[in-house]
Image (cartoon, rainbow, N blue to C red; front, side, top):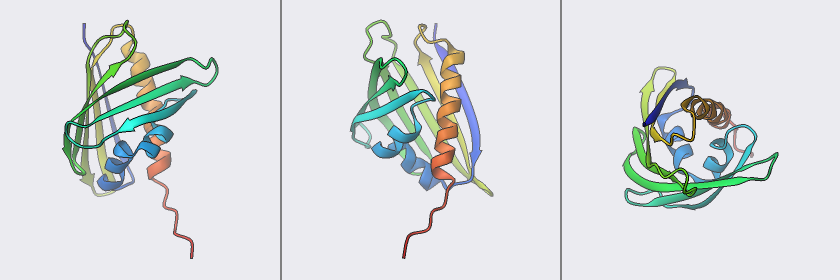
Length: 149
């Protein structure tokens, strides 16, 4: 059975800034790991057909899990679609994530749809993790820090 989660946010940032946050290794390591986890990007080649590899480590237990995938679609500042697969042989399912960005009056309308979540991960846990990640994304992108003189 294929699990799907859908999330929607309106963020006070440009589509360009959010798009960059999804494709910049340092940014991903900062905002994508949900609460209680650290993240490491091992490889990221942000082009159609390019791939990425990441790992999340539970800060309390030290246990890690890694995953990666391929960029399937990159429409600058509008849409990102990529595959995801865990390295854990117990979670063989291929997932697909689609990120849609639309400029609105106050910033960007962001929609994230993740499909094919392995049965070993309850959809509500995945949804909770994405909520935490998107809160961290908001903290990263909505801040305007002026350049120093």
